[in-house]
Image 1 (cartoon, rainbow, N blue to C red):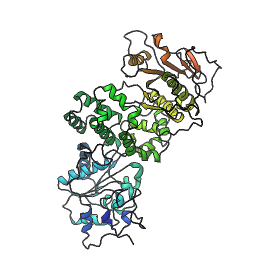
Image 2 (image 1 turned 120 degrees about the horizontal axis):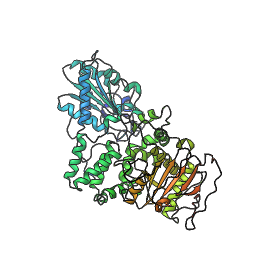
Image 3 (image 1 turned 90 degrees about the vertical axis):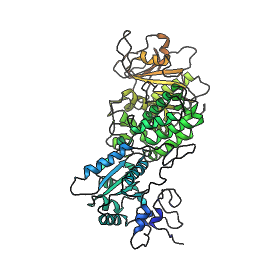
Image 4 (image 1 turned 180 degrees about the horizontal axis):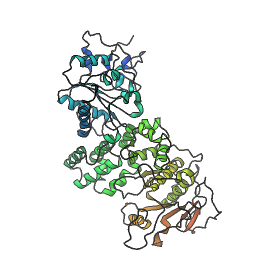
Length: 573
């Protein structure tokens, strides 16, 4: 039996729903057409279009009261996004004076989970309350072929009406005449607002929009009224002390880079889920749990990563390598463009979107070493931590050590850290580590959890305080050690890895020799790795020459020189 559906039937449909599959094809057996390829209803005055896509404010902002933050739409708290709405009205006022009097248009460009669909709904609601006639296409794939001409005709016949057309997923139907008729037509009473992940929106469409709001415009910021209201909302729920609510909220905001969906989803989980509430008594315990293997394997963490990053990682499987080059200040011609197309680059900060994204990139690194390596449960945790340091460094490529200041002014040691972590993830099967480039600043660079429960701090060209009261330097090895000893980092086991990159760099150790064995030094000039003053591997990086053959020093009787762990040693945790 032939498909009897018309374009009007798809007005509110999304991909992978009752009528459409995941590729926007009709589910009726034997059909397989996208919505716009279906016939239009045969109504003489064509009011079907206006009725099918006309926006109403009724029931649009119902809050989900389930156990988890919904994959799409609004959770228990609805943001106002007044800043984004104001940008739209600024565009309306600024474009009224342009000649010729073309349609006003705004394009929301951001990665998945940036709240673009919700922003469109909030904008539509605000316009509707101001007596605009609003038409809403939940996806451009649902736009009928005749929609552009009919909306244009409607606008010309109702010149005294203010008309807004909202189109989500503009890249799903780039050939639609709607964009030509509305965006290029001389219709001063029409506002068109579109949204898409830039990777899926052809430039021939997005370039026609008069104003573009990018990632840096859409992320939540500390000073946003929404953020302040959100904190007050959770304070009112009395889920934790007011101070703890502020700390957790600011921590999540900064760790997620203001990425809307992760911020709201994590906050809702942390402040409502019984398993998370037990960690809300202490700031350090909360951060320890957040970076743990247990949390990273939780339903909510996987839901966030699936919602925001999975598609992008599938499209750009070498995202970690791209990020590595950018952080190292050695980006190739199109690297920034690649991250921008995914919505993962904050053009205002000139930085990767978030620490959450960096860890997602590391978690998507594929195991590539031909000989599987494992952390062995029969080894001590200190030994396993040393194995990670040694083997991660051994596998680094020479160019990964030649880091320069990057566009965002990132500390070079952070780039070295990320490159080292990339090699560890590609080399070990059963390691969990989280890169803690986040707020507040004084967090250990890596929290290693699972078979190891330890912190690892990275330095570059470490210095030693000459005297008490001397000006603190960012690479002061004594100051970094003190953070562990005073439990500022809240880990019992730890190590420091110093990349001594200057020519003939001396081994820099803490003034207290009782802690020398906590410091590993990679001496680039000799391609050697030391623990304290003891040489433990040369060459330290396999693909670099060792200027002079230096024998491996015999270590103390109670220490075992780490062996290369093979698949025969399956210390899986």
